[in-house]
Image 1: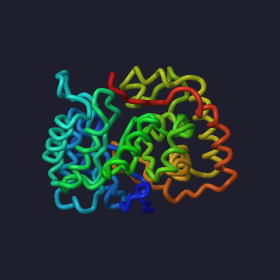
Image 2: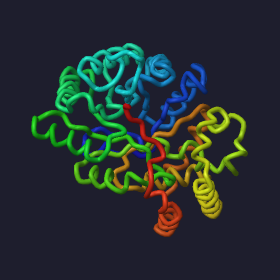
Image 3: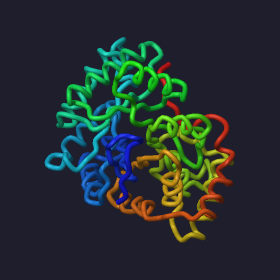
Length: 324
């Protein structure tokens, strides 16, 4: 396994991370535990969850699975997106964040998280309040590092500026949708992170499975796929994304690798990317994804991937979660 610094911080993270959104939903507790143990055995240390995944079930499963192995993991969770319909069930106010951190720690069966991320920007809470709360969490020892997710570049830069001005712990990372099918972060977000020393953590690195080559068309969704279980996902299966998938699959065949490994290896070669989180619902998927770490793309392959995915640098992000 390859390990990298999370931005300019001192935290080392595995180049391949584990996304756990499916734990407690598409993967039951026993299977999820097997996935976690397979990942740890392979050197995958970065485990990403959130307080809303499977209605907190993901955190609970991870807490059970890490008993006796907590020291092997770089454990990260998030808060900020709605947990309920009440006025105190969302956002990044001091009240909400402190309550959510305590709940996450209890479910995760740990007294600290390595990285605590704000799941999205909160327009109703002053950034100073959020950042002072996060700084207090770090000083208390319950949080080691802090990160952001789903921020616009100007919001992230404002947060970093406030932290520097007030002498607070600053964000070490930014989690965002980023893949061959979504290169919009390259317009402003990645240049800003490179300038300020923040690590990028891509989510949806395979565009929800589109870049695996499993979809021949929007109508022909394999049984059990995201488009099969979530009909709303079909909106992403336009001719542009299907054609991108075909081209990625064609290049992967030339390079004797899978489309998934090729897409992940491309991300790992991008500036500022610290770790790429990939979901798994079976242990064998971990082994398959590991091939991306060893796949080193030459300049010609990187150029071809850049060319075929260039149209996806413009337009709207593949995914963006915001408070309404």
